[in-house]
Length: 471
Image (cartoon, rainbow, N blue to C red; front, side, top):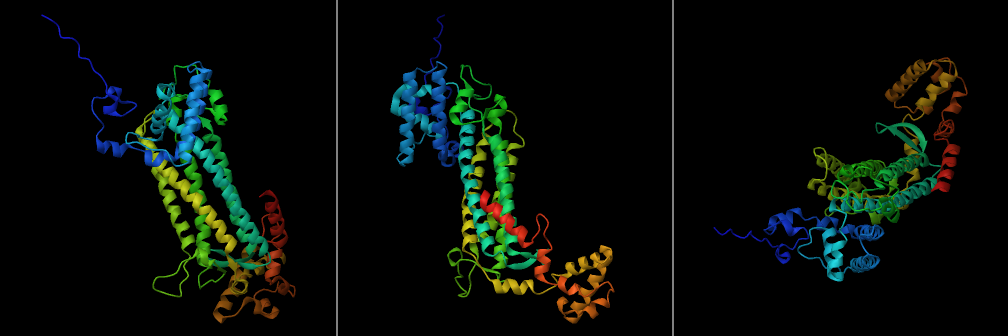
């Protein structure tokens, strides 16, 4: 009986339209095409993808996988594609699943079959995380520069108002007098920690995964250290499974930026409160506020409100990325595609918010009279009275109790603490002497806080001088 010839399977690349389509007999379902495509999100990685591909081509040439001419042709084609993107002339095609496939497809169109050699020794798994690390390096550098500009704006405003005394608050209740400049400087220090977290995160971002292949490494004698040097990475990953599936650096960056947006939100809350009719401490620039469609008198602090609101959006992305990662087995899984939309939105949100905060601070006007009225009322000097008694030998807890009774009686009698006479005070404690009246001034309360970190003017001015120099 004559045997049937084995069935010959051929792949029609025009049918599949995929660079990975050799194994498949059917087209990808259009619903799957739409659902799995990441091009709308990752197309912004084009410059980093081309940079990584140029370095990979040169590494393949060094390893003898590509001839010098082939590598030069590929690099020339990639540079041409880069120019097309820069000029917004790059044409995407329906079969482009992501930015990596789009660039490889266009490269082959431009230089022919030699373009198909570029992907030798690499996978999209190590390619995408390399691109993402390169992108983060560029973007975090830009964000850090904007943070410095914001800090400079805070320092400049502090310098202009170094003589303004305001109420310091705890629980949003007037507590003790502080310099307005000291208050603003607190945000400078917050931003300094934010920069530190980003710098620290960059040490783990700046590790090169390229050369890890899909998960197990590569069969080609590529020099990964050489590639890392070309791309400016400080080290290379040590485990290929971890390298392609690691998104710790994404979590770390989003976490650091979530803390940054928390700081921006706290400042925004104060700007909203301070600009209210109840406080009137500041006036925000008209160009950063909006009006009401119904109430003509309104001047709404929309920008700080939106910055405050966007912090929740960033927090949500942090939890989202953690949730994507929590159940993934080694190594790469398509779930990891979900990291970029969250990360990019966080980066975009922070990149927009920090410069806005800087401009808000630059443009705000301090209502010195309103701030002075607030500092001149209430019982901001009560702690000074208690501390005075301590200097006269009374244990602090007893001094606290005596002062508390004085404040209570002043509240009942609707009386200002500074209107108390020496005779009045001595009715509470014989330790009060004539010099107590010298202790009961805002300026004195400020100047006594002269230790490191205190609100004394000489300390604040010294700190501003350091910040002006270092920033």
